[in-house]
Length: 282
Image (cartoon, rainbow, N blue to C red; front, side, top):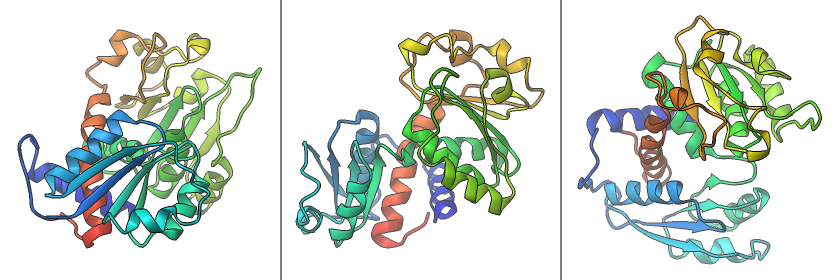
């Protein structure tokens, strides 16, 4: 399914580079629900834009839902053809989906940030053609998107190193063990690093985590840091929000693809919608 969605999103972007004031009728008269426990404006707009582009209607509900109630998914699914969810936890999404009679997709949870990770990977495929044998480097505070990369990189043939904590406060991502299992099956590399130098060594893709005012020095990145540790063609992405841990020169560097990845949110959301509602690929 992952490559189906990525290939579909890439094809849609190829056919429709500018989506402003465009409307297809692939999902005409469908209803897409955006159900948020916490407001995620970028994801919210991406899903809403995708729904409009495909001819569907969207409704946005932001509420402190009582996810434990065993009827929530069933009731909401009476009134929508697909439900995109953003929540602080993840198990509740699984329970909600089990109750629902329509597809439920997790935009963001404590465990995953699938749309953001897939959008970044889409940008990388646009540059490199595939992920196979690429070296990923994640440097920054723990974030759900790191969990998504930890699963997607070994699935798609890439190696990943990461530094998401300091030596005084060691922490491993929630899905580290799952990533280890996949990496052993696909013979890809996975390493938790203790220094910036280790994580950047021979990196093709560098991803900075979200700003953390308490750890600016710990995760500080500059162009010189990257170029002194890799001789490869490299790309840079920022998870956002950005703080002073990333220099202006790096954030706006010609190798930075942060804005490309965020533009791809709408294409990934559209590909997901078509896939789960109508089994349609572009």
